[in-house]
Image (cartoon, rainbow, N blue to C red):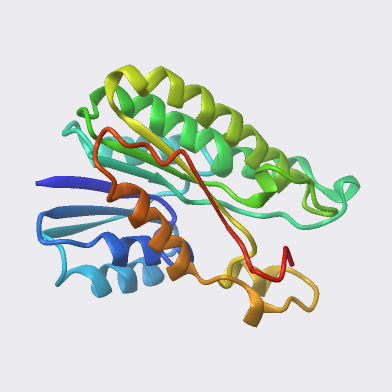
Length: 230
C-alpha cells in the first residue's frame, strides 16, 4: 500500500492533485486548515483510493508542523507533495512582521521540516513534489514576500535533490504561472481568471512526472498560458 501526503489539499491545486492521484492501492493523507473544505476533498476521493485521512493542522507555526508529522506516523511515505502556500500581496513597505513570518512558515519552513523528517525514511523510487511558481524565478511588484519564499524553496529544493540522488528519491519542482484558484478572491484587482491555467492542468503535470520510470527524473516543469504571463 502506497502512502501519499499532500499539503494544502482543501481546495485548488492540492485538491486537484489528490483527485488525480487517488488509486485503489493508495492511502491519501490530506492536510488542510479548512475543516469543511478538506472534508469535501476527502469525500471526492474516498471511493477512488484505499483510504483517506484528513489532517487539520496550521503549517504557519512549528507546532502545527510537528503535530502533522506526529499524526502521519512512522510508516514511510512514497510521495510528499509540498503544495500548501499563502500569498500576501501588497507593497513591501506595508508587509507586517506577522505576515512575513506566516509566509516563511507556510511556504518555506513547513516544506523544509517535512522533507527533513520524511525523506530519510522514504524508500528508493519515492518522490517529493514541490509546487513552486513562476514567482520562484521572477520578481513581481507587490508580491515581495511571496516571491522571496518561492525563491527560497527553489534553492532548498535544488540542494535537497542533489543530496537525495544517491538514495534514488526524486525531487520534482512544478512552476505554474497564474492558476485559477480561490487565492485570487483575496487579491485586489481585476485578474483575467478565464485566461489562467487550471488546477487540473497542474495536477496533470504532477501525474506525468510521477508516471516516469523510477530512474527517470523530470526535474522541473513550468506551466503557463500560451499568451504569456498574466
